[in-house]
Length: 351
Ligand code: PMP
Image (cartoon, rainbow, N blue to C red; front, side, top):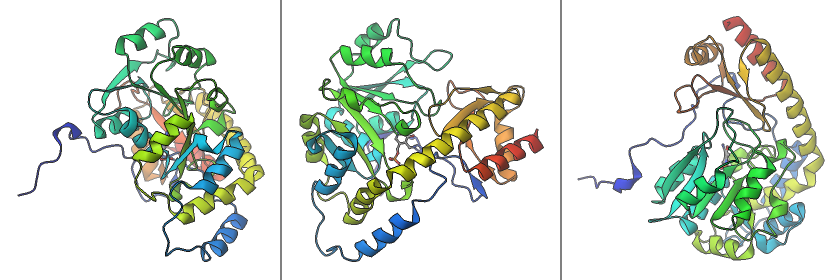
């Protein structure tokens, strides 16, 4: 007989974006550009010299030093894992669990709820307003009523793209309670960061990833920056040697290519503004984005049908139409100029 899995896992199939074979893939917010060729050449040369018969450094010390230098913090304030999803998992394994509550502001990144369920943490969703912003007016009261162990703030937010004001961060951090997790997966696209607040807020954790503008989604590398005491706990709950040598090396070498990364950020921001304008010209509702994607509502058109028609044209975007609070909404990742042109052309064709 096949044993029954834990009952509190639920029946959800989890968080999955379609992986359909199409000519243009604009659905999972990755970088449309590969990593710099020179970086890959250097890495492939050095990777052959790694002592692969040995376990890697348990605390990925060299990579933590490089991340710390990049953000101007000390290296004992850095924890690294296999993608920022794993960082989120470790945070809830450490600070969530049975009897604990995690809170977030919906609509937001679906993994906060999924990982809460995986770790037996109760998940509580507070609503954003009609413009997908968090209301400052009664925020303190609403959070106090829940009194969560962990608060997730996706900044800028996925899937809406919206940047929350400093006022919201001030209210949450001034409260001085809960573990506050600011997820900056898209932080480079809005040029703002809460990393500067970590030193004066001992309960603040800022999460980042190499999956977006660093163009390493396939390698699975993410990290967080927080007070040393929190970081020590995260290292203690992670599996031994969880980060392999080859990815730690690649991530470290990436920091030699900051100018290239910044050029790609500027190109994508420029393209994001162009795509947003074009979508608005079509009469769609478009939300202002501080990320590498744009959420839009194709007014007067069935979003789900539009999504299917775009797939027939070989263009894959993300269908949010059936998600709570995202009625008829679609999200397009910003690609290269060519990919964006193809998306816009297909959209006008279908229209
Ligand atoms: N946080 C947010 C808000 C994201 O959108 C994503 C990826 N879609 C992640 C975290 C996870 O990224 P990764 O595990 O690839 O680092």
